[in-house]
Image 1 (cartoon, rainbow, N blue to C red):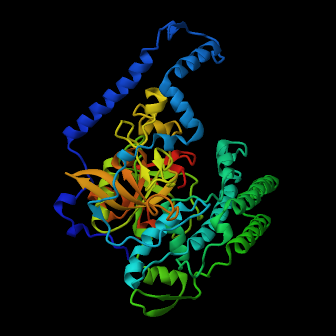
Image 2 (cartoon, rainbow, N blue to C red):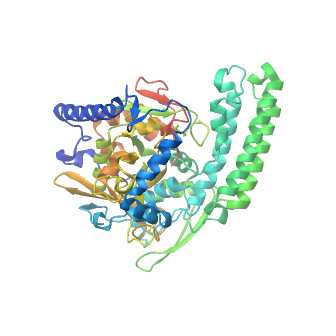
Image 3 (tube, one colour):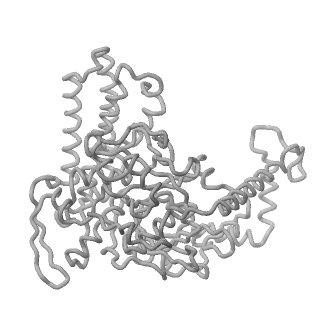
Length: 548
């Protein structure tokens, strides 16, 4: 079972979910209102003006080339801009802006006692969510079996995820071609169809997808089913399978149209065609990823523990997960911070998943909470010794690849104290400051979850969160031997998801999560009420539907 800390054993000072007093909430609302008013004031200054920068405002729809020439001359008059031009013409902008004096030290007041090893490497694939999940799950097994290092087979999860996604896609197409379906859902050129056709076997995924695969197929050590060339560089296989599925979608659409009213039932021809597609995809995966262990047949795993003692473990993937691993994935669920939608509500993404809904399978759902709740939940788990799976927008204000620097950082501070002060070169109007808040960025397509990693430490000073220790899956060469330092400001702006258990949320939040079937047996046994006033359904193209 999972190693979540019991509610009863938690100190009173750590109870709850970081809910603030009404006075502090009012102060926060007033601050946000003031910032919004300041942003609007900048637009009002331009309203009603007949000139722009002392020049008549050109009303043409074309780019105002005379003004452009004026801007070019003006910006290059300044010596510092000539220097900036020289620097940015030969170096990356982050290398030029990088401020070593403002780097955060890799020192943390709270850190989990046992970080998993070795540092993992997802290679040229988008399997970060699988690596993050297995990096969390392996810690209990490493301790239990006295291992110096261990990895679960990421390839095993990836194989079954891709194969199940193919089946999920085919079932969606069959569902959307039923005679009673109308409107955009029935339109092969409509937004929903075109979205589903875009990337049906995407490498990415979400926590609920990990749970679905692990609960159905179990886990195996990496030594039993290691990565293949194709699983480390998935683009070509993804294309081959996607091509087959797109063709299949068209053929199913044509077949259902021919069947007419009889298409309300699955005809033998439809089922036979679907099976032929699944066989083709199965053959592709087996020949490129390798034949995976059968979930109910024994595998043999040999290892030596830290005392030098030899062990030979014979088990099935399902039993290994259920009885040996020491981690129950189904007991964990996703908290997210989406300020566009009300907090303390459940968000469900339509048409998103990897396994067709059956008993034991749960759809992708999140419980929406404040950023402060995400922080406190993650910190409480770390204090209790548990690593934390989280999802974020990793490409913003980050330096991770090393590039000769001794570390890796995520820092969105745009003041002179920040690590990457873009306004230092590009000016205050470049749009990297706080004029574009989290909700607005989500609404306008500027941000979404792009990557999953693991929290293993947090630095707290005088009760305030300062920085976070992050375990990545881009190998030991990136960051500080595979680890990153995240500022708490970056956390608030670009962390969207924290996976937790009911032991680290307050009673109200835990009750809502249980009622909505976010965790435990309620989530996998199909006993949850399907319609709930606290559930908001989002379209599959919503930013919260992005796959890390």
